[in-house]
Length: 279
Image 1 (cartoon, rainbow, N blue to C red):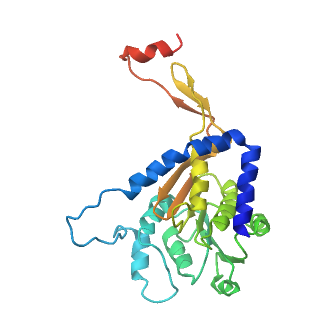
Image 2 (tube, rainbow, N blue to C red):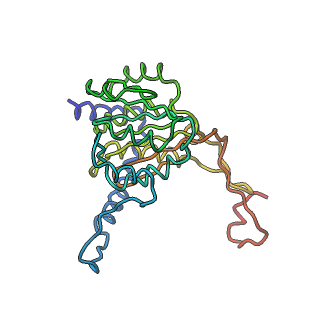
């Protein structure tokens, strides 16, 4: 049923936004070229053993994971821990409201508490009612389907502030897309949205993120003594989008910007562009 629904949505997109759809089709050849480059990337055979990536030994999240030999389970790709640390360390010791979707065995809820400190408020979301057992002081558990937009409407009414989202839920693209659409606009300024386990080529969630990247690059700057353009609503609030193997991070700005500018500094310039600049 889901593929038929997706096909219908694609057809509707072509009918309602033909110019955007044709632009997307024109970009398909270069997308395939990029995939060819990645597929044919040269391999290095100088070493007979290839090390498995781990995180920085000084990373407190990695230390917590490595020390977890008993107790509530944590199951993560090892390279995720440096991603977490890089994007979430600014919240350490602050009042921060974090949502983790996909509680499973509860160990990562303890990890976030240890890493972020006593001022953090943790909200766990899972579809399994058994996960209510992880609720406790400053940790509230919501049972619901992350693809259910009605569930997120209720959630937002009860959790007015969200600083961090960790989507480690069902991993299906339609679930990930629904979660992003329902939570990213709701997030507090400076918020960080993390989606894990984006697997496989032609992944629909990765393609969705590609559309967001296109929107981040959107514009037709005016050529003046400096380049400038007004920021779209999306550009004004979204600071950056980061891709790593299997995981994507989106960061919101602390405050919106009105425009994007590229001023020129200096007094000596090659003449071949001067004719294009207004006097």
